[in-house]
Amino acid sequence: MFPPTFVDVGHLTSPVREDGTHEYVLIDSTQSWANRLEEVADDPALGLPRIEVQVGAQSLSACTLPHRVYDAILRDSTDGTTTFRDTELGRSLVSARPSDATALLRHAPTVLLFGGWDSFAGLKVGAAKWPAALSGQILGFDAQLSRKTGVRVDPLEISIDDFQSYKAAAPAEVWTLDADAAEKDGKGKPVTLKPSEVGHGNIPAAVAFKGAWVSRIELRSALSITRLRRYHYPVNGVASPERDRDGGGAGRPREPLGEQRQPITGIRKHPCGPSADVQSLPGRRHRQRARAWQARPAGRCRRQPSRQRCAEQAAWLRAAPSRRIPRRCCHP
Image 1 (cartoon, helix red, strand yellow):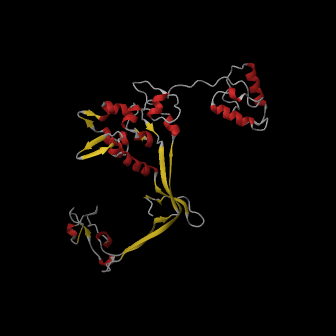
Image 2 (tube, one colour):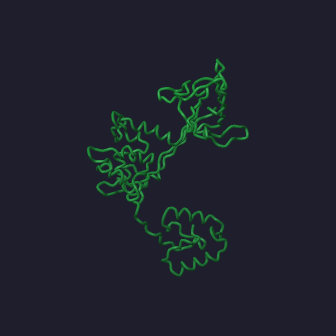
Image 3 (cartoon, rainbow, N blue to C red):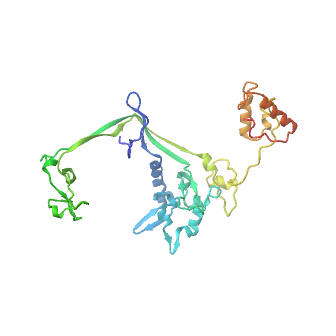
């Protein structure tokens, strides 16, 4: 097979192993794989929303633009006499944020999956960044790179010493034998050419890595459910958990961005002291960590080997049970 090559790198592989092979070679990058999925999503038969821009006789979809709905081609387009970003649709897409992603869900849902960055928003407006929630790569494992070479043998055996030609000054000509019709350099002398530059002479063989043998090929992809949970889809400015779940927010929705959560209160016992009442601890994370602490040997503290500090914290809590455990406490 022939994996893609990159400038100054060639094939992208893991470090070479003792037997001369590589653990893997990259066959399809994350960006290329996302482009392939966008080609599928761009099919009108699929029924997904489409935003198109007409450039001459060519019609381009937002899925085919490099930066999707934030691309410069769409930014510089107009609807009649109104620029795209000044239209109602453009304003809603530019102003979309995780707390209100309804416009993207309705008109450009692929941005929520593959990400997007409004890098042309400017400092006054701020740039909306949508990290990719869906990503993947195609890898070939146990890769053995193969070498490829090529050589051109000139049947006339023209050498550089026996060849005299000049670069033609006329744009329609490649080379010329007339020095007066040749292109001149900075010193006024005609620019000479090598035989290989005009299709003559031998071209020596060059060896390079091209292609690879692999034992298996795998597609490894991941969908970030936690990232999709951060998006909310209010209707007429009103958000609800039901709309978030129906609109695409996976799982239990979280609070909209900008709202501060209430501080954790009600913890009455220190984990390094007597066994805490696990069920009374607020939050699933605190209950899980408390169970882990109870399973540890008695007297162990995660951040402080000495129990002196823990005893001081426990006494501080007993003196005022309504206090919250400070951030610097060794509570897990």
